Length: 335
Image (cartoon, rainbow, N blue to C red; front, side):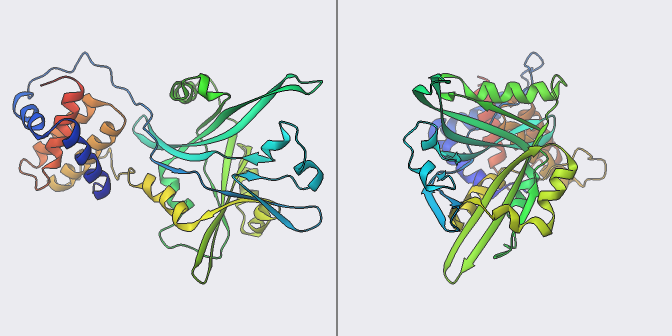
């Protein structure tokens, strides 16, 4: 049913911010409020998990491997030693890799946000007056792909690749001067409304390695056009090894596992087909729908599903449903 860690963490936050008394008051006095004038919406969640400590590797022209913190070096020594602005960024670099969440319709999606160092020249032809800044790119994909990125049974010492079937993507250059959440949501809504068609995809290549007590994960985000034949090439077992032949990122296994599992805590089992559900299953389904709507800031729908859950099971053992409902009402100033 509901993920235990998420419930406990959120309950602690609610106790600190609102106090138990406000939850009880909301439960007792808000049964008849009319929410018909409120607009239903889905917002972008806060960061659910993040990796910030990485090592980038690149195979050099002479056959040796060179690494750098959070950056993939170039493949030749001369370029790596260059002091030019764009050369210092490496072939690729990563400040952090984040996972966030959004509901599109009634489907659960994750937003993978890659933040990186970027820049440009004031005079590009002359390569003068380099200005450095931070940018990000994001990729929206089904939350259930997380289980494919890191299965329950870890396939140590086996390479594999996952087609994320990216729903929407985008780049926000110099994101510190913009409101990044708005940029991401606008891109998602443009695809949802059919204003643009996403032509890009991501293949997530993964290589968990276990050598005695040492456990690491090598991974690579392979950007390609959204074409099935390209995805089939990168995900074919015969090509898995090639994905890591020249460049990749590496991090501690526990760190990578937390990155995926922490985001999975927010992925809940729900169904829209409720005709054959028992009262207990209907209670759990509505409870989970309420949590999903709560996560996304859709307070009216969250309250509606919590109410339906309590109709299915008027005397639940889990009193946190009242806390969730009371907190949602407090967000809407229904006291």
